[in-house]
Length: 128
Image 1 (cartoon, rainbow, N blue to C red):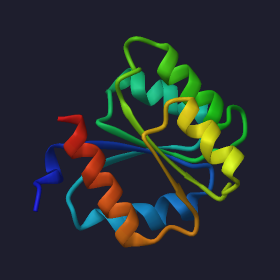
Image 2 (cartoon, rainbow, N blue to C red):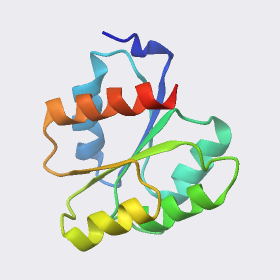
Image 3 (tube, helix red, strand yellow):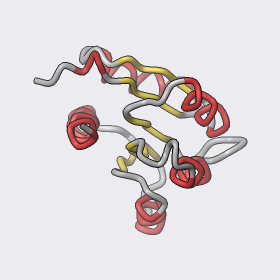
């Protein structure tokens, strides 16, 4: 079992309940978890402190996840941050768009805890 306490995660979702549920799923692994409620806030949080992994929703006000992802990947300072999309969108078109914009994985909601934990630990292992 990896020691996750050294890892900084940024969860981006406009629905407080979603943030709470994912936070609860991951809390027993001692991640340092920060949150943002939209893409604009996500980009500000990333400026303050670069996360090791971003868990990114797509359907959000102000700036959706696809636009956020594309801005993260276009910036040399943030292009290397691993991003996992967590979204209710589940069409092949949306999933392919996410990967094409640079997402490292795509998990559809409702989120299965074991899938999330496995994905997060795999992405952090790959980021080292």
